[in-house]
Length: 224
Image (cartoon, rainbow, N blue to C red; front, top):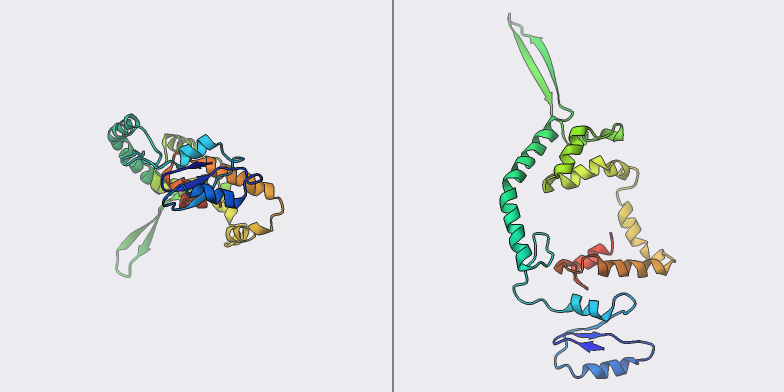
């Protein structure tokens, strides 16, 4: 068993330690905020200490929220300072590319009642829907190159749904399909599945504040 300054973290063999004995040990802490039992089968004590230790004020994180050193923080800032121009250019290229795919122009002439005519031009603008319509053809060379160079954050979710055809597969299921799966979790008979999920949840992003044990991020990952 080990204790932290404000919180009490219990690391004990529950088969040999009675609960009242554990509570007696916690009396050495003046003001515990919470009592958390650690599972040695999931993580070692050293890993728990590292994950649960309070972060010092001023701890640096990168743009994605992961803890980083001062040197890594400065390198990232310098990289994005240099890269910002390239990123803006790439974003512009994606906007133009999404507008152009599937684009076609139709011109037709309408005779006016008076002796002159009007010419109308109908333009159909492309979009992400045309990246891989219904999965009937393979990605073009241009699309492959664009993806390898990086997809802007604003379009990343939509683009990957289209080129992976996940948006198409999603149409094969009811709109509430995911919610129904979550609501039926308790019906699973293989409890080992839950044990494996809990192991992976704790090990997914150990250096990310949002996914700290007991945090909102950890709860979200559990339902991926």
